[in-house]
Length: 189
Image (cartoon, rainbow, N blue to C red; front, side, top):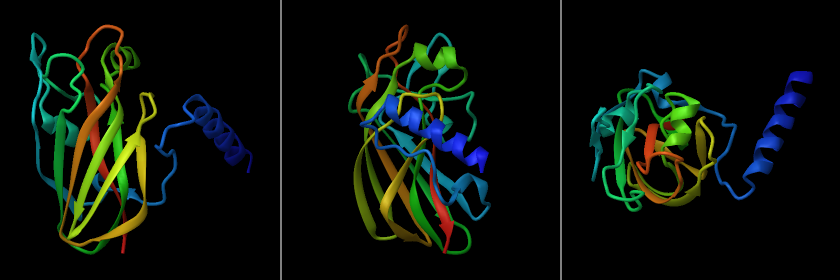
């Protein structure tokens, strides 16, 4: 009981730091990466950064590795840049409950704040004939942001998520906007 009270107090404190954010801290479900029944089958972007350190491929957003990231390659902050991923169910039927986004470059806290991070994003979701568009504001924190849907979609074949950058939190050193990972929040149906 004491542990729950401490967790709730911590959540309230974090929520007070960003009262207008739509992201959540708790979800009832699992990440698609934590089940062998759902897998990423395709992804893409309209831009990616190549610099002296290498190329920041969009595939990095779907590798479940917090030491890699995608970075947009447009001049300025990359507003309007877009990435997308497609997941496919290999077996079973699921409820699509939301999207998990690890914004910024989460390799370390220092690297996270050096680079731009997504602030406002538009998510266009297509799931087995159902469509949804969500404008979300992410918390500026080197952790996962959870976008929980008001109504869940039945997910038995494919789901696609298109993410567009609408605004960013400025990095103190680099103007590149980064996203470390994206995944689906699901529940066995």
